[in-house]
Length: 115
Length: 115
Image 1: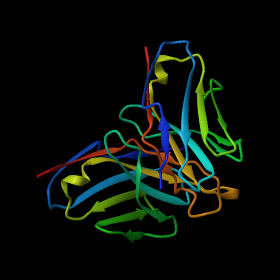
Image 2: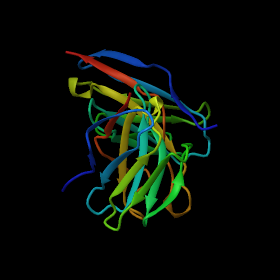
Image 3: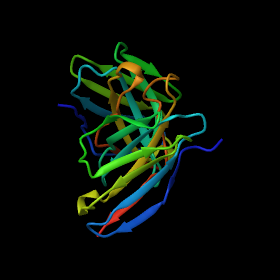
Image 4: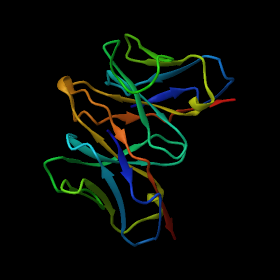
């Protein structure tokens, strides 16, 4: 049973560019949450997708957007990249209505470096 | 505001000793408190949780204590092993209708186990 997968593993971008990160949830999961983890910090909630809609959002600017596909996989898009966007981006999946709401399974993350 | 913080950024213990990792939280309305373990290059991994109406919960070699009076959470690891070396995060969540909710993480404590 595959867990949460993310691609790419590492990414280097230049300021002002745009980036797309991808996530495939754990088998049987239908909800995807995205987190940003700066070096030495705890993950910060970006947003959550369920039924192809964003249903909760953290304190991140509109430059951060996402999408969920019918197969429950998800993308995180960041426009006009800033140096401060350099971080580990984590995807977590869960199943609506099953288990406790915090039972989110995390992927290994995508390390984004903005130069 | 919403914040979860840790008292000690680093903790070094001898193999076989007990470890105690502490955490302070600020949101009295949180329903669950959770401890995660994050190893290098991996996403956070669930360790143990505790509901807000409980004071103590035990797992395999781990115990979580919740003191709501002083808004304090702790993780005790018995007979610490080298494989326990990682960064430990406390997190909290306030569940919303339809089982929504975002995890709010603290900064993290790095546990180093000396053989």
